[in-house]
Length: 353
Ligand code: FNR
Image 1 (cartoon, rainbow, N blue to C red):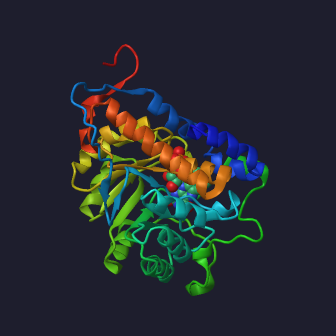
Image 2: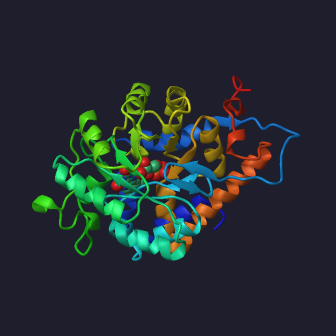
Image 3: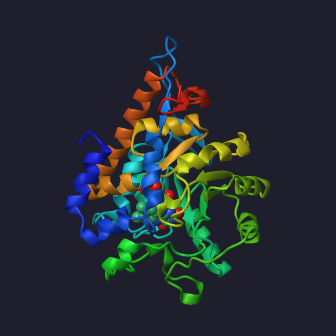
């Protein structure tokens, strides 16, 4: 397999069709889903010449972790529907790649087991834990404790999901929940006996409470409005993930990459800004970095790798992105991520340049 697109094709052939639709699909008309990828095609890089270096270093410093490249694994649910090894395979592959795995609260393997699998590959493997704040604060606290005990070095609070997105493919397929034999393992034995993940409107005060209850860095995932980026920083967020949830929540939103520049401007380097949504090539990573991200997350590409070939497939996805990003950096005349500056990005077409 030489591209993520090929791994996607292979995954499509291998997956149960209803599961494929669950992973691939977006909300409503899937406009945001499609635009996430298309928006990168509307942008171009203007390389600089006669200043390249052979000793490139693409590693990046992130909250609670150093990553070998500016690509991390975005949190996605239900990996055991893609491959029997599920999140264990994903955790091993991310550790082997030396990058951060953001464990999903809705994983089909518990965060403790994921961390153990990652650390068996690399004792220094970094994991973050993704969290939807729950209205019962005891549930949130228990989850934070589990993530902390597992050695997660940051929390990623997903804030774009006051309600579930309208996943019309799933409705058509009658796919509403995990099939028998699978469970959201982080949700076992919680106070109040709840097993399901609640999506419910939360406030900045809930976030304040979370921040007061943990010493871990807290990043907010799912910010698109610059004013929310401003509020997040004011309230002490340790990082922002610009994301439209892979087009799975509100369909009428812009592509993540189109929302990034204004948020990077608001952040002004005070906190790291990450981006996810539509990243399929190393050149997409370079464009996102040039527009102000310190790193990007990949969601579906990891699932395609997992479905295509388990741990090896995920490794392949991450190594493809590493190779392609380093190659793009070389062609742009850069030595490291910091050389990717905003002036390198232009829009395609006659108005560009
Ligand atoms: C997701 N995403 C997600 N986000 C989150 O915060 N918690 C979660 O449990 C999930 N689950 C999930 C499942 C599936 C099948 C997908 C495709 C996505 C969103 C994810 O973290 C990320 O924002 C997007 O996947 C990024 O877009 P790409 O890389 O898939 O284009």
